[in-house]
Length: 61
Picture (cartoon, rainbow, N blue to C red):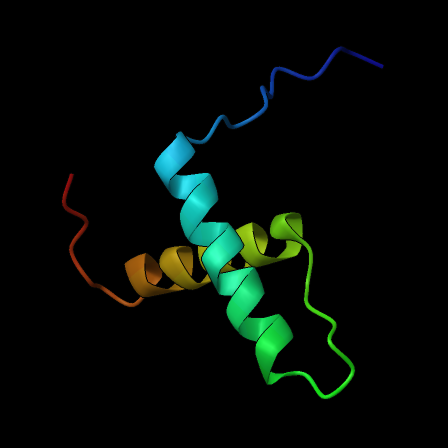
């Protein structure tokens, strides 16, 4: 099997802090004091962004 050409995605400190804030907010909403992991939150945000691009919304950098 050939080696994967995929590389890990590195996030800035600010992006990690924003993900942690989302995680904290989710934990505060939970009656059991649980929250999704940072990885789950990041994947959900990526899925949402990609679906918006597929929907015809313009991407800006």
